[in-house]
Length: 349
Image (cartoon, rainbow, N blue to C red; front, side, top):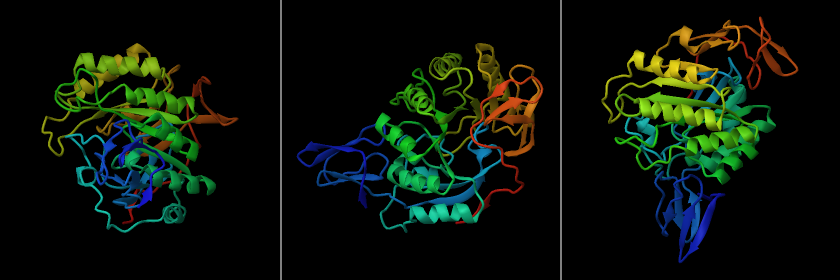
């Protein structure tokens, strides 16, 4: 174990973890809610450092990120534990398990080495909640950036402002940010401050990072009109119309057995978001290329055609590190460069 970068001694052997917004107060010998940070004699140690649960090369579009290094692949890694424990979690075998402390440690240098060997353009902390692996993500990112690789996170964005600034300062410049719901929710995650995700997304953008928002629409949970109007309103208030929104279909998983989100509901939310002024709204987990391809918000032409998490057509003109519609010249927000490759993800361990 190694001491975490972010904690506050409280006296009497107690300490407060400052990694995520929950700010767990830990008596000596006690771990936080995620199981990765433990107080030992007034010092908070990162128990889960480098104890990885998966390493896999995956297309960036599966995160989902559609405006960040399109066509590229990222060596994706995860640890154990989470700070939310969503009852519909798709990766509960990772998120609901806490590190034991005897798992093999993968040095950050080895992870970057694997990304280079497999021809990935970057690295992605994903699968479970990567903020639970803060110190490791920072160490991996610093090495990745030195080797010319990008680093991004798939996250619930429930950072403290200090931890968010720490990963951005290290070089993380892409975030796929999950919107779990709204204050009016009554069935799950009722103790979560859902506005924090927008606060932190804005902070990330203001700090120069790229952000795309992901709204998993859970049947009879966060799919009602008052909820999606709140979400889209906050999106516009904090982030503006150019930040992409992914409206994704839910499927029963773990402890949540509501029916899959009706396609009609997804389209209702998408149409409302477009009507309110969002420029880039995608419908995911239905595998319809027409709903996942990027269209010019001015002339309506298809600019990036996607199918099966792969870019099949890319029709943007690039000049001075900016991408424009090939027909009308509309500026399209894209971070990084387009990477043309034709291979599927591969599981390495």
